[in-house]
Length: 396
Image 1: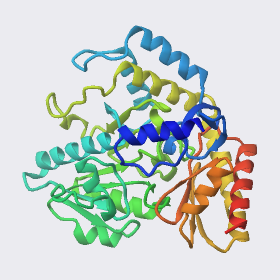
Image 2 (image 1 turned 90 degrees about the vertical axis):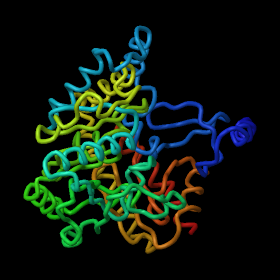
Image 3 (image 1 turned 90 degrees about the horizontal axis):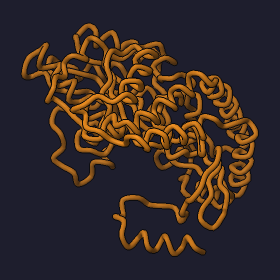
């Protein structure tokens, strides 16, 4: 097969940082992908919650083409119109005051860590630099973000890590209270833990954290890199909880496949950053911000959020039906089109079998299968995915 040749060529030149499946993708349309041998796959991975509008969205393609004809990049020493317009949409539709654009989720988290430490030192003194994060969290692969990640498997052989990061139990407020101190400048968490197994936060937990941050005058920071930008059926996951952070980190679905990240902050802390405090060469470039504008406007104006709520509910019902049929499924959890099923056995062979039958799935840990399809998914496509998964489970 043609893709065998390309896989071999790839192995010769690309660092071995991913356990890649033996597929070389070449084309996509709607919620389907094709490999270079012409095999078709129903995509319930969407670039790991990235391709929010699916594939071949003509509005996105045309906007990027027209922008890139004129200006792909310019330095942040100057203003550019797509950058301003994308920021205006984010601010208008959120609780935040200012935006910092970057290129990825890890960069967004890094900028939030820096903002939090500057905030702590400004209002509480030089010793206020500690940040509390959650066990089983995931915040990215850069050194600050990987330190904030509460899973030791990602930190292996990377010591020494960043100083001043403490870990509490997710959804356990008492564990947070035990480690908070006068040195704490912020609490960072995911409203829905992604790589930690698709685990939504309890609303009461978030409310208690919010009250604690207000009491101590420290920052509450949400990592919505995976669960934000429409994934829950709301533009931002905090809207599903009605518990509001001071800082939010975004990426993945924001560009619909084009690399972009963002960190937003409210009036309480947005002015802490001054010229020279932080920067990103490519952050907020005209092409990336054009993609973000199209994604945001489409989600807001084209009933995509309504579709996420409806199809998320339908997907969850179908997964619960599978749980009734197969005792190896021990839990179904998630919000909107960010769902997961926890199994009592390893999931590797199940995912491989689904891929062979034309369904792309991805894990979230060793025993949770994650479902994060494009936000344009329809009921018949969910049925197709469930039929494939059920066929595979019958053979386990």
